[in-house]
Image (tube, rainbow, N blue to C red; front, side, top):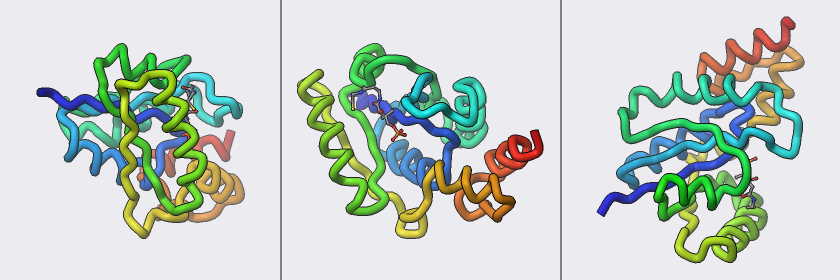
Length: 161
Ligand code: PNS
C-alpha cells in the first residue's frame, strides 16, 4: 500500500521549521505532496509561483517522492486529488495545538477518510515562523537561523525593492 500525504500551508516563505517537518514526513510517507495555498487570507509577500520555487529548490535532494504544487480551495479536496489519506501538519509548541486541532476536526468532518498527522519540529525551530522571519528581514536583521539561504536571499531582494 502506498502511503500518500499532503502538507498544506501558506509557506510565505518556507522556513527551517517547515523544512524540518518535510524531512520528517518524507521519512514516514511514500509520497509527500507539499501544497502551497494560492490565496491565503493574508496578502502574501511572495507570489504563489515564487513560494513554490523557493520550496522546490530546498526539497530536490529528497528525491521524486516529494513534490510541490500550488492549490486553491479546500485542503481535503487537494488531498483527494492526490489520493492522499493523510494531511501533515507541524507542531512547534503547545500553542500551535489548539488551532491545529480545530483544523484537523474540520477536515475530518469534511473528509472522514483523511487523517491529520502531526509531526513535532525539532526544539531549535520552536520559535520560527514565516511572519517573524519576514519582520526580522524587513528591518535588516539576521534570519539565517530561521530560513534556508535561498529564502534569505529572496527576503533581501524584497527589502531592496
Ligand atoms: O501555513 P498556514 O497558513 O498555517 O496554513 C493554513 C492552511 C493553508 C493549511 C489552511 O488555512 C487551509 O487548509 N486552507 C485551505 C482552506 C481549507 O481547507 N479550510 C478548511 C480547513 S481549516
